[in-house]
Length: 480
Image (cartoon, rainbow, N blue to C red; front, top):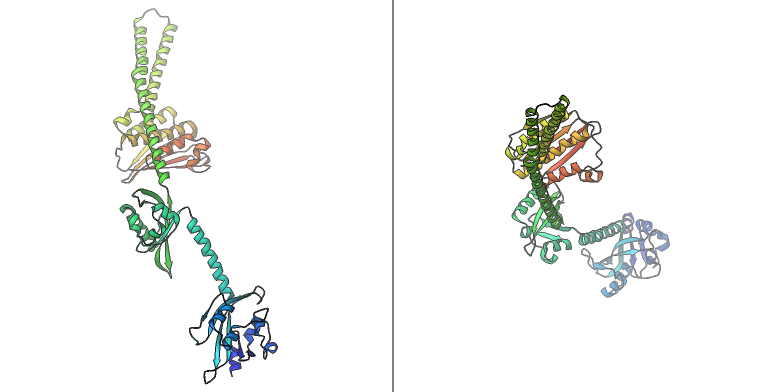
């Protein structure tokens, strides 16, 4: 009966007696070892299934009642007492001669006792755990690689639970916060987030747990251990287990210096723009008060001279009249130049009247059908904002006049509570967009680049849409 049970089992098994002779060798171990039962039953060569040289199997040690130290000598890679069977031992080992590439086996050897409790044999069962071991090794290598990436990452990485308690962090996170890793782990994120950033982090966490869309990365301001502030761009991911949220992984890049440089650059650009506008204003004033006045005075004097002086030949009168017309055209040209340099309408009445004057000028002087639409509640902005917006529209209309070969153009201003949107479009020849707006200076489109910089100074954006033969559209959006 015992032979049938053992042989019918899918678990590789063999039984030896106290003389270490094999008395049972089932079909499953035949398949595992490649040794037929006829070859081995009645012999003490069970070792052949596992080793190239004779040595005890675990079942042999159990039959002999071997001391723990002897078991350890034969299985130094690890063994343990069975938790289920008294006197049984378990171990795992690699057997390079099993199969083509060797096999990992988990084996248990248990004593077989008679009615008096005396050991009369031992049964050893084996389990092929090669796939599990290979998977464990692959997982181990993956974990080692991940740990190396985690520790060596340039970006700060930390994981915290749903309450914000940090569970693990890398060296970059410690350097970012100014804390040792050992001190950082266990801290709550509230310790180094400003109130505004903490509210934002909570909002992001809530959206992630509710599977709502969020914009990544987002900006957080961290308070370092020394009290200084770090500006970071953070990407947060939800960590789940069995579909349940367990915490959050955060990857942060310190952009403090980059932000400071951007702020400094924006400040320098503001100062340069301010200096340019002051110079424009000065030149416009001098042209208006000096050059235009001189030309106008010469025109009046010439007119008086013609009317008072008698005896001019007809051709001389024509010459003087033509000279006066040229002077008048010069005066008008100076006035247009003054308006381009610094329109008085902008200072006196604001952005929309100044833009309306620009639109009228394009229509009258260039014959391009141009109109202005104002949507929403029109309102005034600070002089600096209105000036920069005016320059953007002015540059866009100048581009249409010089390059677009358009017959129609339109300026649409849309006022909302949050923003001002200005759209300038034409039906001209358009052009091929070769990349982002940031790449325009490299392609020689400096006017568009200047408009973009002005939009950035206002904290806004510039979008360019153009198709050859189908015109161009510029969209400027700035916060109110």
